[in-house]
Length: 484
Image (cartoon, one colour):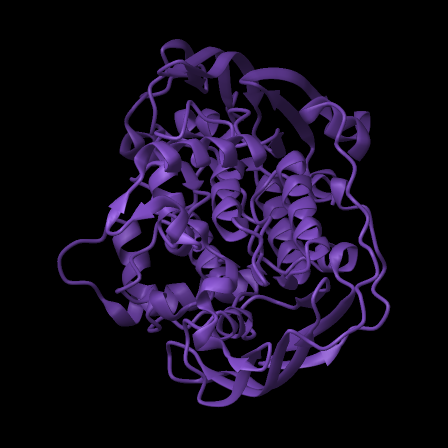
């Protein structure tokens, strides 16, 4: 059996930021090895070196006692090292089959029937449902995640790296994935898993490495740690979740009546939904991804036109209230941020109450930059300054930029879709407290989340969505979200 991957003294700096500071760790065949840490701890930087996407400033990586071809992802792939990235590496304009063919390096004339047969065989093996001829742009986030994993498993290798693979999956899908990871490890593969949800880590990992500020804090066997211990190693003491208060009685601010909305594929994704949300209230909607959550959210904020039914804000159709609505979209990279632009430029996009910072068509640059710095401080955005490019921020800090724009100033309505997806413990708590603060400020908050625990912890009232229809979720238990 090969010795596996050995990382020794790895250091990587991006400008003034030290991303990895002398990291040494071994990843052995036949085990699931989890790497945990808060956003910005260096997890993605570490595995990007393993897959050949980055070259370290110092240190070395050996595979079976031979140096890894650093900075050459194709050579690493040929050696059997595959990686599923945190953000999708898919071409939306192509079909599922075409994306698999592209990733597998097929060239020339492709036997589509044979390729489709092999895809079907793999889907049956893993218990997943994907239509090979479906356009990737029409897939749900969860389906796209499965396709990215399928691409990595197309050619069986020796190392499989997964960067936050469960962020978009339901509980049943997560368990199915974990069964797959255990099976792959039992066949001698080294499985490296980056994750934030500590319960999931303890459910599947054989060993766990904790990173903090680019350094290895601990590498332990699963039996040597629990959720609280891992959390302390990751971030120290976790700030408490502010308590939700009973919302005031009164007339509903958001009224949704018999709403029917089509998705991009022309099918009805929201079918007869009715819902009311009062000022100061958090109404939660949970369910498996792809059951109409995205279409419901986009109809409520006025960016998707319903086929029938209506959405009213204080009795007036939503189209006349867009300036009073804060929106946290499901996918911050595709719909929430312009990654190549700065923090300040992203906050300027969609700015509400624009009159404060404009004189006619001219931006009052000094006043606006002071305000951006205020938001950076208020939301705790870890950055070099307002002129830093958003692409260079960690996932948690990118999400804080989205929140800052949605909550400045406090909106009358806030719609948040999976607002903590892919975030660590500390960033998750910051987002939750921001939602609670918005409700206390009088906003009507619609929280749509695939995490049942998140909805149970935050929502005053909750519903489940299935096949585009809502049903009440009575008395969900309020669990501590710090460790879920």
